[in-house]
Length: 218
Ligand code: GLV
Ligand code: MN
Image (cartoon, rainbow, N blue to C red; front, top):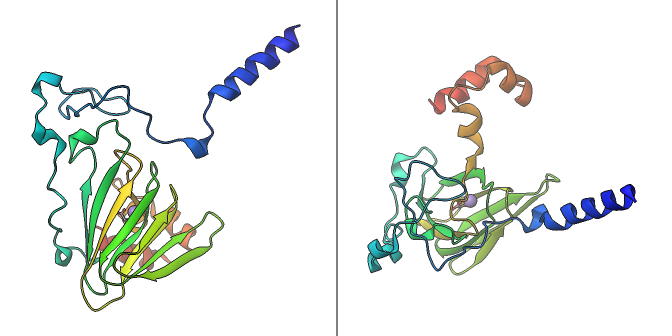
């Protein structure tokens, strides 16, 4: 009898736990919830601005109309974020977008999004778009205007401008705050700094190499 109850209980727990492959931002329980970004506490999203204070302007965002300055980045690229922090109406809706501008020869460097799958469309230019699976296989292709790509959640990926003109991509995510872990500044520019011993051992190089790379991310 006791073992039947334990089996029943374990089955119920198993069935009520979504498998990781189905994990995404939770569904909203209301029409909208314009984020109150000043709220003192947040739990898995932001509290809603009171409905009487919501206006048409809350639902529109022109932040992706212009690109950032690709010249001020060592990577020759600029990512303008259209997530919940920039566009509070996305709060709880499970979607967001970015605008990525890349100068000729520039790169949106290898990074991953811990909370979202990414879909992108090339609007201008010619790009090498690549992603690396957890089996360490690189999948990459040159894309031009109108072509799309998808980056499964959490996988490391990059876009490099391999054309003569500037490149422009719009990307979309199934999270209102996908997050981004950019590999090189994460490891070499974290504060406090990742200990040198960790990096020399990890990359199988001398201290001087680690110092040189760290100096690029000061
Ligand atoms: C592109 O990879 C982006 O994260 O916007
Ligand atoms: Mn990305």
